[in-house]
Image 1: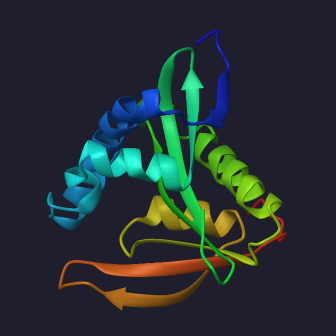
Image 2: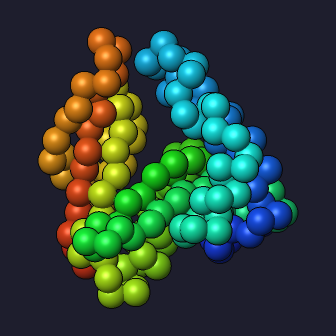
Amino acid sequence: MGMSVTISAATEQDAEQILKLQYLCYQSEAELYGDYSIEPLTQPLASLRSELSTGLVLVARLGDEVVASVRGTVDAVGVAHIGKLIVHPRMRRHGLGGRLLAAIEERLGAAGTATRFELFTGHRSDRNLRLYRKHGYAPVGTREIDDRLTVVTLTKTVGLLATTA
């Protein structure tokens, strides 16, 4: 490729690229669960812009192109919620998801208010579950959404190092 990927905070100008990437990345999840009405595929641009102003959104860029993104917030009791970790299909399997996950953990944990990280994924999303476990997350619960989807919640204590398993 010749260029290196850089990770930085997203700006308002990134909103449309992030939303298009989100739509592309969640196609495989929608197919896996047989549900194309999932929130990442129906989220309006205004909602994403609101997330940009109220939470932390990171992007990975290859030149000017946003090729990956992740979002996070810390709630009043110190739980850092991480969501919508997306990587362009052509950029997968190069460690970019893990780099973004580590970057958002570092930034959310740096403020000193977060005591643990929490995220969730679908029970059939084996690639996601492997990534999260590799980075120190452990399943703490499940919630059945419908007959096709059970959501797995995973957590990790702030400061816990990822394993290389």
